[in-house]
Length: 387
Image (tube, rainbow, N blue to C red; front, top):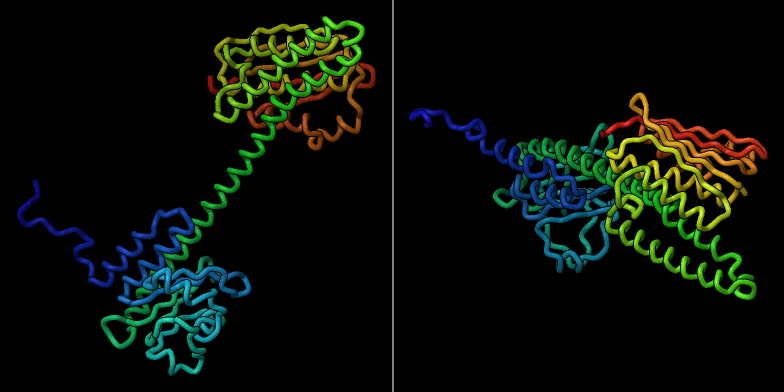
């Protein structure tokens, strides 16, 4: 229960002008959408000092106005005025000198440049720079003081203080946009890796199975028919995986959620489409985190795709073990080996770079051991995190 003589809140004790400033600043704080915060700034500053019109000009490094937001002017009036201002007159003066100007009469000022056709008549003027960390990013322009003949020194002080907060709000929105942009780039990289590791490799496996169908049509039509039927089934699987990928679902290899089942499915897929025999030995828990299983299966799929595409191997072996809080996945083949130019430029080779990125992204390690005619061994070790 409140005491009978309870003091009013701290904000209620503030002078009216300071309280108005506090409310204006609160109105723009925490808004992270750049366009929204820019419009809020110009709307709030107009109300703060009772101006009929307000504008916010955003400038580039050379002082050119790149955006010009207004408040108090309708969309129709704004369209009738035409293109962005070029920074002549008082606007240009504030841009060049980067300091505040308070002018009783725009027309009487020596820097006055006049107004374009269809521009509202404006008399009193207040212009204040907006900056962050010593760099100017914009200018606030206010005209037509509503309850006085001109803007006061107190108005100028209020707008200058508000401009400091406006600069911070604009920078916060810019940084938020940058983070979002980087997140989109990261997501594109992830999508690129996932498509390369799954869908593209599946399609490539189908093309391998179809390579000799023209010869089989004449020599072994039953085998040609079997290959074609299997290709249709495989392509339907690709379509399902793309749909699941688009809707953010788990790949079909993760239906059971176990690493062992996924590795068996990958081995079966390779053996159906090549002459390479695959052996599998696993000793891993069935309850591994799905994200870990997905990354390990992506590595295995990429490695086995390289075996099918480049190794000309008779045999390949998959080992997966769990020990000391880590999962170790090894894919080895007895093929022709990896050329040194590829092996020594692992970051530039798309498949190897994808595998390395997945391993190191989980705090693990990635190793390739290969020699001409001695086969290739890929070893990935990742911590058992997230269990």
